[in-house]
Length: 111
Length: 114
Image (cartoon, rainbow over all chains, first blue to last red):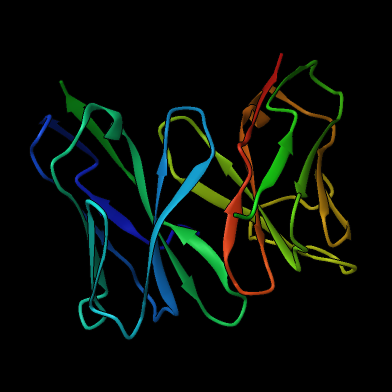
C-alpha cells in the first residue's frame, strides 16, 4: 500500500526559481529516498537520507528529514527546464526493506 | 554503477494471452527483486517481492495466479501476466536490491492489452 503523501501534487515554476516538494509518511523508517521519473520512463535515484540524518545535500538538491513529524522535503535550487519530471519519495522501512512510494509531485519548469 | 535491464520496454498483446517481462541485473547479484505497477499519473504500487530461490511474497490484492513471478537466479526475475485483460494495461517496473542494500530500477515495461 502507498505509505506516503506528497504535496503539492503539481508544481509549476519559472526556470531559475527554487522548487520545494514535501513528503509525509506513516511508520518508522530505515531511510527515505527521492527519485525522479521522466514521463513513461524508469526511476532515477536522486538522494538517500538515513533516519539518523536531518539534512543532506547533493549538487542542487537539498533534502531534509524530520522523523518526529514523519516528513521530508526536497529542494531543487536554480531549477532548469530539464528538471521537469515527476518526483517521488520512497521509504525503506521494516525488515523486508522494500520501498514504499509516495504519491508524487509533477514538477514543470517553464523556460 | 549498478544497471538493471528490463525487457521488453513496450508490448501490446491480445486479451487472454500471456506476457512475460524480464528483469536482469547486469553487473551485480540481486538477492531481492521487486515488481511495481504504475497507472497513468499515479505512483508506483508494490506488487510483489521475490527472493532468489524462494516463492515471491505478494502484496494484498495482487493475484499470485495471475502475476507469476520467477526468480530462478541472482540476476534474473520474470513477471508473467497470465490471461491478460485490458485492465492489466499498465506500466510495470522492476527493482533490484544488491547485497549492499542499494536499489536500482529497470526502465519499465508499458503493457497494453487490446
